[in-house]
Image 1 (spheres, rainbow, N blue to C red):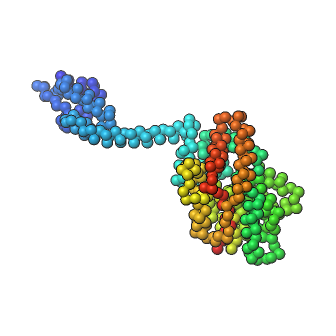
Image 2: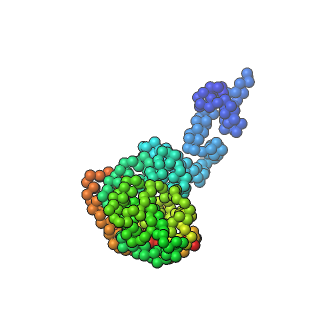
Image 3: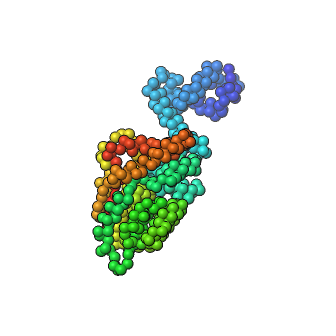
Length: 399
């Protein structure tokens, strides 16, 4: 026989807990002549069995049912599912904490957060010490802040010396420019002035050179990478048109210009960085009344892409839609479609052939590079394109 203090010590429970269990009928004390409670070996065994059931995740009430009658299998299955869900949540929490401490990759977390809360994600990244340029690149390229520096170093090495960062040709740029110039003469309040064109995300100036050679606009070339702007200026040096091109190092998300300043805003392949729908909205105030927005964007060419391509682009570019859907978004944002066409096949080969050669050159030197792996995967998906996705050029007029 055990006094209550002795029983409490043996099972590691408090006196008040044992009294509560006695009230529930889980144990039964006998009163001694001196008034003290005493408990039997059976009570001790019953308490230890109770603790084993509780260790399985059962509530006290469920444990009591198991002690008093046959085990309810359905009840145990339900409890097992609850525990599995809790374990999955705890593992997810642990994985995130581990990633934040640099012990594992944060790529999946960044992708999920970007899909659900892109603005808050960008703001949070900047609070972690990334400037806007780094944060935007992290969102769209490395997707892991713990490995961002190495990823970007590898990425820049891969594209070092390449002319283009995406599909395109001078012929495609010129076709879009001609479609725009057919209408811009009516925009000029003073025909003696050339008008103004803003190129956003100009990079090294491949499209800038075409614009400078084939139109009379005063051109402002904007990019958030000063080294690319330096390269642009070198490429234009010596051309008679270079005096009409001014470079500005700034973010496409915070344009440092006056409202209604430009006759044309031009952006080839870069609007996805801030979101094309957001670009439609945010850039419109800087375009003159009845002015133009010219962009190219990656779109689906079919409503039924292959599962492999769909899975890849949902990760790489979750905002990707069909050309019809993008045009509908533009109309809702206050634009009229003037012209639209997919970039030529030459645009793809001019980008991917030099890139493939560069990958082949660097692969033996960078066997563990995640940036190189990502680019190789994109090349593999491009080889399976078969008309399922395109870059679409859109010439839009502000209405």
